[in-house]
Length: 456
Image (tube, rainbow, N blue to C red; front, side, top):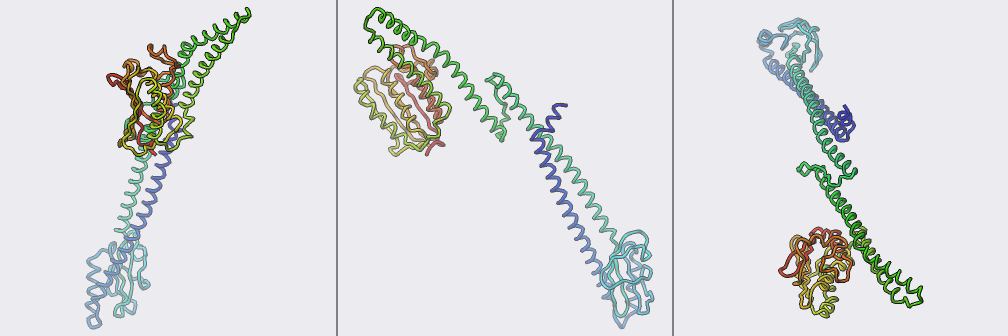
């Protein structure tokens, strides 16, 4: 009962009902117009038939052979039943010369009389044509019975068709409304489960690509994003508790040591400098985390403008070429084509993306490593990459390196917060770029594929 009540209140059912009623109304209006046109055509056809019959009968008249005219009318009268066709010939004195009906008067031209008024059985109407031929009064007529039968058949056909249309419109509307409501109920259940904490719940899809499937797909993508963000928050909370515990303990020990030495009157300037540097590193970590959160929230999309990726990569290569050289490494940049490669994005963030990738390669690769920035244009967009022939990243850890504060064991001896690649991933996602890590045997390749729809 509750389900039926919800169906009656549902928007799909009301829309289906409204469109069904509109369709029925349009069909009935079309029926009425068609019926009226048919009725008019039948009436005109009957008038034409009466006129033709009158003309044929009148054509047999001649002043020299009046008896032949009377005989012709009598023959027509004898061969036709008065319930179907009537014939009447009256002389100038008002005397009946021939015919199959009683004597009656009629005005010239076309007119309609009732069968009972002229002595014909039945209650049909008769369409007559009256006129004077060779001094005699000639009346010819045909019954409306055939025309009325055709009109009645047409009317009943329209009534039955309207009934069938009403049944199909209401039944079909209810069926499709129930189907749409069932899919909307699936969306409602999925969202209820999500709001209850089941972030793995997704909206079922029909797979037919209709508008509900499109909306459901977009909502599922939003739920994927939400689930990833919530999981990221959980992971960040755990990583912050784990990774910042050590620097905070160091800061506390430094401060306590400074307090002890100060109490003994010893110099604590060096300890205060160490505490300030440790505090700066902690603040830098929190600032990076905040920036990643702002990027993931899409706050920087308002600053999107057409930018040239080729120009950005060339600038990064030029700036860090000397840094790599000082570190005993080489940094090259290649681009195909040489023309600008425009995408819609934030120049500052894209610069930060390539800077982070190049700095990672410089910091974690040994001397003699060759680092390459490459840009290639294709039919579907642009592929930008940073590669090296250094130690690379183990396959099992390639997805983990995008987690906030995650650092490889071999990287824990170097400076850094473990947020560089997390920032790269956030910027890439903001620009709808797909990021891929590949093993170059030896070395690591990082490729960013910018889709064509983001081209300027």
